[in-house]
Image 1 (tube, rainbow, N blue to C red):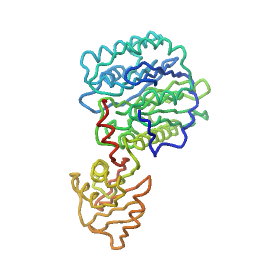
Image 2: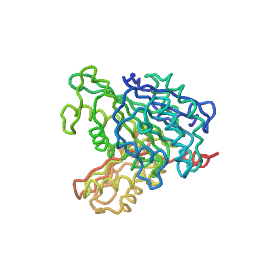
Image 3: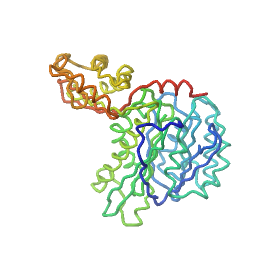
Image 4: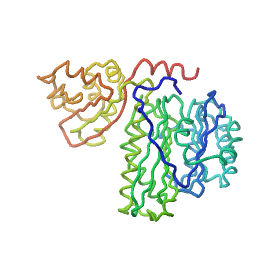
Length: 413
């Protein structure tokens, strides 16, 4: 966790209301950091429906393996998250650590170990001494309360400079349901479940299969459309929990994916996920600028996505943005290397509202001053139109500064 707050940090944090059916507590276990919290516990007083998506890395962490094994049962009573150690690439010791944590959490909450979910974030390859925090879970389960969202978001931070939280609401059967979410992530962030953790809780009554379908539908355009440095973590975890407590106020259960009563909720979930994903980009390690890359006119949506990521992940593009240099030639380079169909003489590029290139060459009305003014802004939009099809995609990223190298060069120090 950095002591220097990102210049793109929000001026104030969203006020997240308590959600019936879930309580939260944090603790300082001394896993890596001193004088700060590093463990978070969520307690669901009744079994909550759960859905999740996880890293596509072929070297996943022990907690990811544990969550995948439990997810199919669709019920959650406890979530335990620690920062400072990813419990990844830790072999048999890693699995023993998850087993100890799950056993302690189950005893503290009074549930089965199959109703416990775990996540860890931090250094890869260091054995995690779960006994440091397993011993405090009993107390945490007792003192947990419903209004600890900001505290929880702080407890799971690593190189983040600020806690990431958001809230939304929707109507089901005329009853207002709430969605609260938190996320952490600043580096090792890329599409395919960009180290990224995010946890969302709602009081809506939604069965696990429908919740999973909604999550799968929205993850592509939100968390899987952000990139800080093109690196996919071993630990990426995104989970949604539905306590069902709104049923006590008259909100009916959403048990079918096509139920029209679930549309407003699904829209709110998508908005919340995008909010949290963009907050991660705005806190990218060393970031000073948020960048939105939009590609249109591609041969397909998949092609547009690959081209957008090629631009967003290019070190040359990102360093030009950091230097406030309107070097559109680097965008041309990134389009050309993406491996997707492109025709040079149909290409057009915009920085903000300024068209810098058209028909395969510099725009005749190009103004270096106007383009430079765009690059001085904190939020920059780059748009590329390939002029060959209807495929489109949008990716969010940030600039690449000297601070990124310093943060990651000193990460284990």
